[in-house]
Figure (tube, rainbow, N blue to C red):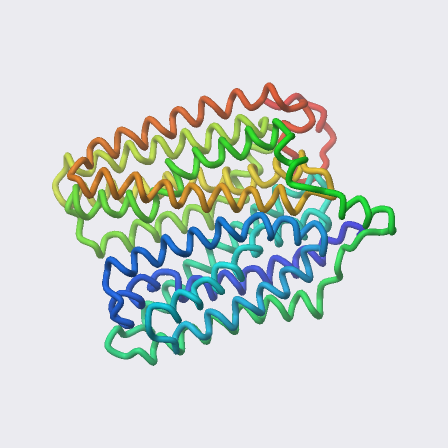
Length: 418
């Protein structure tokens, strides 16, 4: 398919709709299961573990489908499944029905980021991919932030029907993305039968034999485990249980995090456009190390200072996020052959799933055992070590692969990246 900025913009708008729906329900899923459906805190926690296991099982199949069938039809099918599943969540009761519906939610959501990034890779030239991924990540966070604010005014734990309305609105948001894909977006599709045969011949074995891919995804698991995986588990538990910050202050902290991403995404990508990708990724993870250091000082301060440390810490974390998501996705799509692009993008989703299983497990075992300060030491050290490991990834990449693409071709584009 020829490059089409118009098509890419339509995909980004549709993805933003889906993210808005996600934001409507994401902050309250635990509360809904534990309190509204009376499953209890322990069972609700196990439901999140169940969702992680389903996500792990779905990832290989998602990657293979994206390569064999194409991202557009896979996304449309996944969005339909997601809409039916999330819309049903407000009306099911009992442990087994909830588990079945949550499995549908996870399977439906699994292709959304890898499918969207794979679709965008065929719509924008290589030098514009990271900018496109940056806008996708911006839309993701803006949608989640706005959706979270709207849902905060709508939900009432004492009124289960308020959650039913919320989940139906979420379903409509996913269907809006499906309609955009069905009506306004053309499918890339292979241009010849030979390309179809080549795509069908792709396998996960080829991905695993690519040392660059294995190293990148290994670094990704480490980065998510000590970074993203701590954001909603370790950071919040440390703030409330160790630093004894009021739970209401967490809303300000996450708002600051979202504001930094939305306001700084495009500017920071432009600022670092001449950096090597491995340099940008290492800086992202080292920024997370700084964020955890700031957050860790909350325990040493009075309440007002502790709240400020939590808010500033998560805001600094947002700076690293603006670099990590678009750059790591851009690098994966640079080293990926066209016929394996879906699998490479699915691997990125798999690193997120693994890290978000391992990260909360580390946080829960340490902070839950009264070892909050050890948790801070572990995540600060883990992100520092990951940053150093990422600098070693450079040896496996060519200069062209490691050079971050500028958003637009410029006259002096041959200048060496730092």
